[in-house]
Length: 250
Image (cartoon, rainbow, N blue to C red):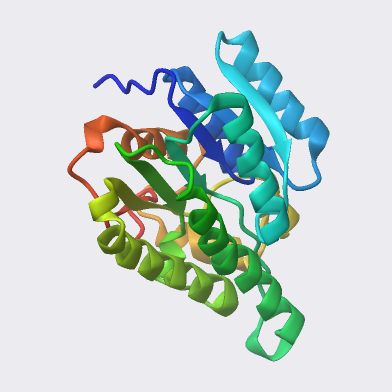
């Protein structure tokens, strides 16, 4: 099945590394003009842009904290000025902190919900000004943990459950604007972020591996094609759905 996103303008939040970077490269390989968004990792974002261009694709990097309204407004203004429209929005930017419930602080809760829930809300809110009358596609990157939460992940997984609910609600709210809203829910994936969390060699990693029927963590490149599919016209009659890309974990 060929995915054709030729000349579609796509914003991928948090795409300087990990799953977001893989999504940006995948959309570009399908013909999209990709905005590689980053909060602070400018050199990583430019590396993603360079890789896309070297492969014959089109991309630029734009800085914005996608949980700050002023940054979001500015980012979409730049997209409008340079490309005139928006066709695809991928809400990938996220943050995670794992630990026992006794260790959760108010700041932990607020930061994860600010980035993982408020961020997509503000981003979708602003993006609606820029989709053409023919509509477009929004893909939220959630987590299989939003449906099947593991121990020590209560705040992160509950924020992803909220994102899942947001997807369904907005799919029904935006249907008359011809904007489809879906979710891709990755299982545990080997990224810079997961390594930073200290999962390697931990009891938590062992528990995750035991819960994955395929017996291994996923790769970012295995998540990205699902996003490209949902962003494309191949998924033209799909909205409000959650597609798990998780090695059989549910």
